[in-house]
Amino acid sequence: MKGAAKKQFDRAIAAAATLTGKRFSLLVASSLVATTAIVAVALATPGDNGPLTALLARGLAPEEAPVAAPVEPKPEPAAESGSGGTTSSAAPSSSPSVPLESVAPEAETEEAAPEPEPEEETTPTTPTAATPEAGQIKHVFVVSVASPGYEAAFGATPQMPYLAGTLRPKGQLLENYKLLGNEGLPNRIATISGQPPNTATKGECATYTEIPATAKVNSQGVVSGSGCVYPVATLTLADQLVGARMIWHGYFEGMIDETGKPDNCVHPSPEEAEQPLPGGYSAARNPFVYFHSLLDLGDCAENDMPLEQLETDLRKIESTPNYSYISPSPCNAGRAGQCVPGSLEGAAAADAFLAEWVPKILASPAYKKDGLLIVAFDEAAPGLPATDPVGALLLSRFVGPGTSDSVEYGPYSLLKSAQELFGLPYLGAANSFKVRSFGQALRGGETANGD
Picture 1: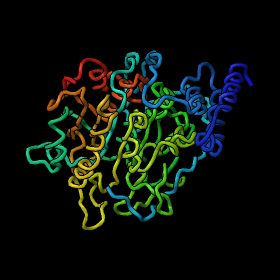
Picture 2 (picture 1 turned 45 degrees about the vertical axis):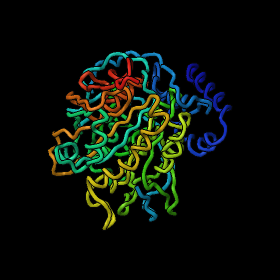
Picture 3 (picture 1 turned 90 degrees about the vertical axis):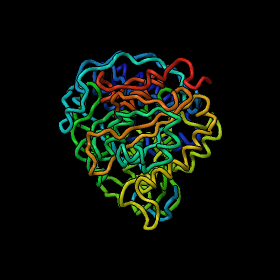
Picture 4 (picture 1 turned 180 degrees about the vertical axis):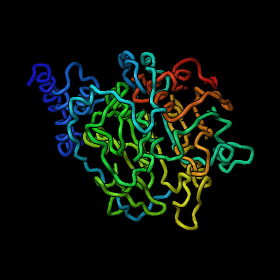
């Protein structure tokens, strides 16, 4: 074993001695494969291993991390220029979280930097400036639903009256927010990782397939090829938050195990197809289950949970995550053909979900103190033009009520803005000057409402 790698390995062993409780039990069950893969890459890759070293270190970090107050990381230099409800009682065909086998990538993964073959137009061409320090917003809530179209959501006679009539006057409308395409899963994956669409994700990952560990990765961290579950070295916003000693949770409606009981991080077994029942949970609405970095080190099993937990976590600032991703079932997200006969469907179902859960967020101590709520659309009906804006809404005491922003934003903007608010480096396609962010405007200054 090389000297530098041996020192890193020894430090990892020393850190393991500090593990206690749930974190220990998760790592006993899941970390061997992932850690072996990470160490193998470290040994095979010359020079600084950057994200891989950070991934291993945060996987073995002790639990005594502060919950709400983020640590301001040292700004990293820019990368080199490159390309860039109700809960169903019926059990789904998916299985509870079991770490998937993650094969150690070969050495050339870090050396080669080709364009992602399917989506060259979404790849960044210019790196951004250095990451800013963390700002005044410490709690970000993203509520993700399906779009009925801009006019149907925000027009003169909206199909979502709670969103347009009650929430819109309280916040800032992003008038030119556009999706990467009408398919939902690519937009959700882009929001937490900056990875562009590929053939499998555009098909909503009907089969839970692996992206080969030997897939090429460019200088921005964008993975080429097609598949659903990303290799262990592909990082997400969730990985970054854990590395910065902040907390993230995903909250998903109707997430249950094969016995019908609420469970964490539910996804299909490798190479199997998911067959969600009407009104039930679908893994395709849960972007965190598509990354080995979260599956193999136990973070998904610990932080990806049923929606009901959100109400409990909102009671105190200390129990409210710094980043909360909230998603209804496909039916209550507003997706056509996904509901039990006789229940609300489409835009009415999505609006009813917002009317039930958004007031709970707005009333929480964390939101009132330093929170930002983003109501974002993550997919659109097949008949809607993919290039048309769908809009998004920001609510915060740091945002002017009843205001509008006409700048073009998208799923990469949601990621980049969150990273700027928390003082984190940019990932994947978010690392481009072409990707606009609203995070800079919210990082400091007086409150928009005069509070």
